[in-house]
Image (cartoon, rainbow, N blue to C red; front, top):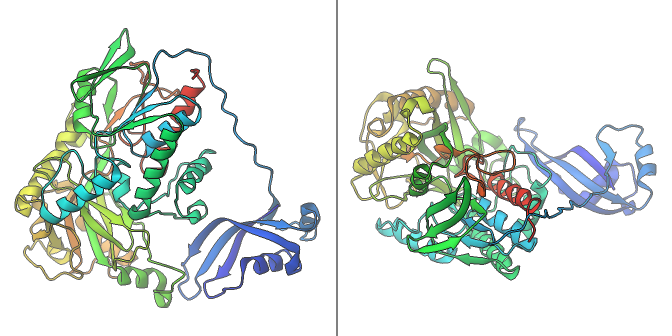
Length: 531
């Protein structure tokens, strides 16, 4: 097999890849057996000449070395080394009880899947409900404003990421990343996630993927239980011995994979009370900004905007506020998506973004978040949670005490005015928005940095700071406000047998990195213990 890298194909060229690859290798078309896409990205830096940039694996009928030699040292063509399958060797330490996984988000699901695949028959506990019932509960909240604290955007099968864009981008490089994608495609994810530069599943398809992974875990001998909230842990001499679920059920447990997500505030408090090692960490808060998708498409693709092969455009923006020593940045950008109500506590408004697989809502949104450091919110480990909660409650009050969200046009926000409801696009947030002054539900350092960032973003993406673009508040759950401190073996530094994993533990920042963290923790466990 040969690898062709940096293979640029114009947007308007619809020649079959097999023919293009043969031409690139100076071979006859019938010499190419198969072409597999390894990676595909879009280069839109020159809007009059947009290209797809491919990395391809090409199987040819002649010996690969011979084909390579004919190219005379072409730096973008190379032989592909055979893939060596990873061999995970179980350890010899005996277990008296099966491992327990708490949390059925990406970290918990992939930890449980890996454990089940190797014969450990894990018990997976999720405080929320199964993804189908959860979807109904969330739809009811968005329609009526009646929040269910047990089943919402934050809690339930699949985790918070299930009601997002289903983005699979990550900066983490790890050999097991391919295995994560393989498991997802096995569970029904679109095959292109394995090669797109910015892959996504969409919340609609991700729900099916989550259910299929759960089914596979159970077929492999694991058990999955919903509405099962971890309420206590028990340890002796620094070693985990058991857990309590729903305040009334004790389970003997020597190995607990703790994938609680970044919003399990009651669990953080319980772990703190049990003296589990944790530390405060930075996070970010801000607002959601929403535009017509056409505006973003035109800014990013020029005259090619709307081309069916391009799809909905995205963006990534960063502003360094040197005067304040902070950054403002776009986060969880959702092309063709919606701004959604993501509260998990009574009396608080939280926003998030969500897209379906087709990204065809006609609207684009993202968080505009500003960094928050432990020095901003107090000396105690859990003070970051109270910091988040304070602004969520202020937003709830500003919105009208009914889970409507406070909203403000960019023009009003930048000029210090309030009340305009002439929006560039009708706000998608449900159960609705209330015109308000967002400075009343965000810290001054956040609004000051956002006010400096918006004109800068408008210079980078034309129309981004349009006076009628809508800002919806507040976005507070960008990441965990604490980190559960662990060692290189993924085990808590002061509670042996406790494996903090994923976003809630402070070691991941999205679906892919969380899934990978859960998988790697499970491998570490497998290499220590026998099934």
